Length: 72
Image 1 (cartoon, rainbow, N blue to C red):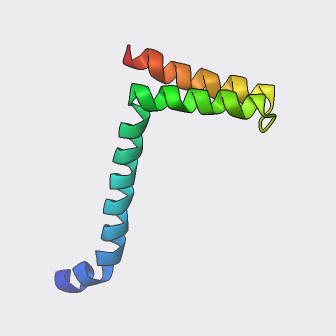
Image 2: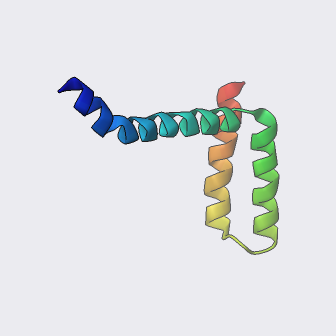
């Protein structure tokens, strides 16, 4: 029965492993100061080009600044 379970759950286990790897890469990317500063510049550009509202800008800016402050 265990062999059958392993065979049946192999795709699910693969997806779980892949999701964990994606999460690790995303966490690593968001913890990089340079990347966060780049995101802040992109955010400012979007605001200046009227692609996002002031409220959206302020909310995202707070999130990015919180990430930078957490690392400091």
